[in-house]
Amino acid sequence: MAKPIPIPVRRAAEASSRVDALVRDMHARSAVAGVGALVDARGRPLRDLRISVTDRCNFRCVYCMPKDVFGRDYPFLPHGELLTFEEITRLARLFKAQGVNKIRLTGGEPLLRKNIERLIEMLAGIGGLDLTLTTNGALLARKARSLKDAGLQRVTVSLDALDDSAFRAMNDVDFPVARVLDGIDAAAAAGLSPIKVNMVVKRGANEREIVPLARHFRGSGHILRFIEFMDVGHTNGWRMDEVVPAAEVLKIVDAEFPIEPVDPNYRGEVAERWRYRDGEGEIGVIASVTQAFCSDCTRARLSTDGKVYTCLFGTEGFDLKTPLREGASDAELADAIAAIWRQRADRYSELRTAATAALPKVEMSYIGG
Ligand code: SAM
Ligand code: SF4
Ligand code: SF4
Image (tube, rainbow, N blue to C red; front, top):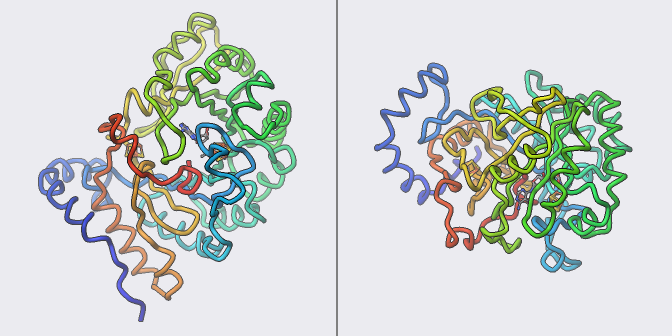
């Protein structure tokens, strides 16, 4: 008989006072989400699961894994700590039973995980899930076809500059832009579309690349999305004055290529959608710093070593690997997932200040971006 799965008491106690205050609102919202649907302490359903399949990466993007911190001696997780594909798939199935309908594989760089195609096949076998992956694109030209054949539906590719030297400076491993563009072409040819292209905009680093990237992807069918530089983790030296607000990005694009807003596809969509007035396609902005969207956040994250984080800016995860490996039943694990979600009250981006930015949060490469 497995031990009961511990849900940290402090968090449960913290959450319970808020639960009291929010209970009426929660009932009203769960009526919207569906009778008996699992909702958190703020009435938000569980819909998306991001799974970090490795904490390692072949890039050292300055805003994510700065080289001086993630150097040769950095203690990445040993192989035995990583969830196996069987463990990931079992948890994914249980998360789906609690309401998840979309899974994104991420990391670190997910294409570095050996035999990732096998994991995709196993997840696709669950059925009824929107299955996507976020990658830096370095290995995409080689892998796009096998990813598609395994059952991946779409990819998001990160690309912070079109200018080669600006891009090499952002990824800090001298990786050329042309190979990422080849990866995007291969993904399109394999049918992993519509492809989203993520650009993190950091003031003083790459805001001059906004218009060139917009020009490049206009008319391609790919959706370029501009992401505000966030204070994820504890190592990227974030400062508010290095954030280029989404509103400023939109003005820059609009001055060159006039745009207009588009309605969201669904509740909780993180990117605000815009389209070119001349019909040449769509862009998005992810204004996580200047216009927090916590009230609609339906995302859970599963770290490389099997901890559940209910916020990107979490400091503490809920360990599911230990009970998994000690023989917990599906029912026990399902109860644990439900309990974790029910007590969730996170809304970091709504509360962000210079002081919270300095808190010791987990790194994005480990928790999954
Ligand atoms: N390695 C893959 C990649 O780069 O696409 C997947 C993991 S990465 C952590 C996921 C996304 O998070 C990427 O689009 C990346 O640009 C974004 N990201 C990383 N650090 C960020 C930061 N400080 N602020 C905003 N976005 C960030
Ligand atoms: Fe690696 Fe992605 Fe982080 Fe860049 S953003 S360092 S590619 S995990
Ligand atoms: Fe969700 Fe946390 Fe981001 Fe708010 S700060 S949108 S709760 S992940």
